[in-house]
Structures are given as structure tokens and as C-alpha cells.
Image (cartoon, one colour):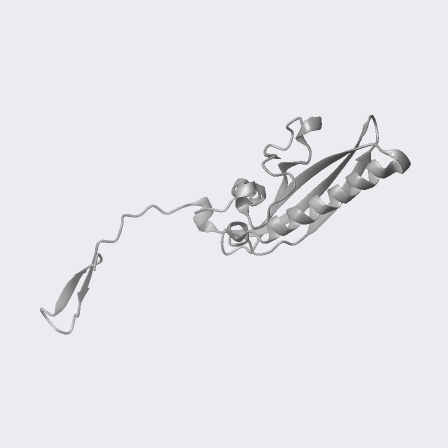
Length: 184
């Protein structure tokens, strides 16, 4: 099966869904793709997924072969009620870093995902905070680089009939040969 950036994004989503235990996240089933879905107060914590870029680097002129790096952006959002002495901000920040760690553990330990990859060349996280209104909102963009291979078979698949029989003859020995069915 051909590995594509879209396949990788599906595997990241599967790794973050609650049935992907033993690595659940506080977001539970609130994992959305595409990552531009609007969320509101009662939906936090939430995770949104988006494919940010895909870069193919040729492996040479002799073959059609590429090392592909897809950047998957995981947008994690949390909220906490405002409280005296800015306690809500601290609660939101703590929840955000906990969710970030849960996401990284779930994605990096996902066998269905890692079996399709050569490596994770980078993981980059950029947090943001807001205290507008009665709740503190916190979010983090986690960009995860996913490196995989695409070769000639991904661009020009060869269609062939199933092999059902193999015939062997020995040219120096007339009449000596065999037909072997492949279903044995």
C-alpha cells in the first residue's frame, strides 16, 4: 500500500482517539480533522489536526524515489476558569503541558504510524495563552515531522496477473521438466 501524507494524518488521528489505549489523552474523543473546526467552551480540551506541508527530496537521478517529510500540525486547546491570584492561568498552563506530553507519547508510540515511517525528524511545540473573558484559554501547536519513502511503485504501479504456475525445463536434458502449481 502506498504511503501518503493523507495516510499519515489518518494514522496520527487514530493514535489520538480514545480506542488507541494504552496512551489516552485528556481530550478523549474530541479529536478533529480537518483542523479548522470551530470549538467552543464545553469542548475543551480538544485536539485538531492539519497537514501543514509536504516536502519531497529526490534520492538521485537513477530512480524515481523520494524521501518525504510531512509536517502534521496538532493543535491542542484547553480552558480553565479564572480564579484569584491568577490561579486559572496556572491551571490552564498545567493542563496544556500535560496534554502536550500525552499527545507526544500517543503519536510517537503508535505502531501503525511508526511502521510506515523512517523517523520523526523533528517535533516542535509553540504555546499560546489568552485571558480574555471568564476563562483562561491555552493552546499549543505541535508540529510533528513524519519522514517516509516513496519509490517508483508509488508513482507508476505495475499491474500484473497473479502467479498461478511455475514451469521449469532443463535444456540439456530433453523431456526433463516440471510444472509446479503455486497453491501448494
